[in-house]
Length: 272
Image (tube, rainbow, N blue to C red; front, side, top):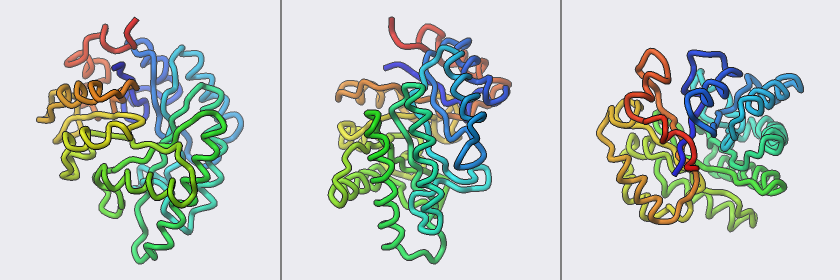
């Protein structure tokens, strides 16, 4: 399975619009990003500059997050926030539009930290409607909306693979929208105390994208104690044929130095 690099957490030693080219120079032919703008609605110039940066670098954009709020400030998405529903809806067309221009077909919708005191039933109803709206928009270009368990955010309702799959099932049952898939992040599952090996066995057929980092520490593979190679081999055996996103934090002086510690250059791009 080919690797891709997440340019929102790696290559941060260079400005964001230079990261696709840096990834290409490091041997990758595919990238993914969290939402690359400060607001839910980028200006036309901001969107054009981002599209040009990816296109000019000669890399494929495989995954793009919807706007997720103030990530440095602790936000982890807007999907389940009833008060910010319009903000999420506003960002859908911008996200899918960028995907259409760049051939990206996977869009990650972070569920969000449920606000303290929020009505859970209303929150889940908003999430269902938001995801259905995102799914319908993505379907226009053959895209898939990703749902991801996340660690390190106590108010984030989805902590296990089963939690995320239950959302996929709920949206399909209540709205008929089925182009949603699991983002199987092996690091987040391990950090939350879920069983990644069991999740691989149970849910690879529901998996639309895979991401990795080692645990503890969220560093490069080999810096923790997760048997990532074993799990990835099993995912491939079970039929997954997509990319594996590198979404880790490097402790090295720069991203390439960290990559050189564990990933030979000939393994960074897709097989010829």
